[in-house]
Image (cartoon, rainbow, N blue to C red; front, side, top):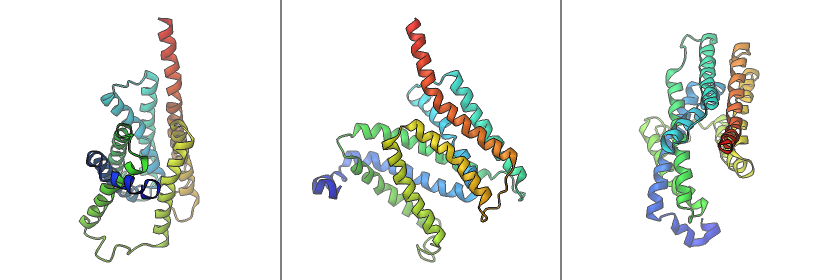
Length: 262
């Protein structure tokens, strides 16, 4: 804000009305980050990505409740198929795992809570970024980041372990690599959204499930082994998500055709 708009836009960050709104959204984003880290600590990368596709179901329910946007019968069938295929993958993974812990319930719960928070943040961000369109995009993000950063710091103080040995204790090369990858992910997501539409973005995220699954199987640092049932469950999730995303335009055209016939 200071670089592009000078002191005038820098002062906009402290504008009370918008700061209250975007601080609340930033607080929820911070909770989503914490839930994401908690879930990834309990689940494999492939399982996390598979469960992350539940965002389509949660988003559909939120849009139905908040905006009254109904889904066609075909879309509800696909959403149910996505949910069932995720259950099949998780149950199959728990039976084939070497440990006796079964399905990590807290990990699954954290993913679902993270997805719910993320979907709510996306809906609120879309609404209020348009309501406060007089503010530049980077000013809105800066207002979010204030509460975002404060909340993450408060969580780090509350866990009782982060600051005992120093904040940077445990920052191994692997941890630095993960940190760097999250920065690249954030910027690349923004770039994809600016160049492509949300349909291609969702299909790309679904395809990432297959890439992560093969990385878990092929890389020596992961204990996972290739198993046909797990692979087929992953493929069902990917194809179901792709079919659901692609069905939107088909349903809209069918509704328009029915309207013209009347």
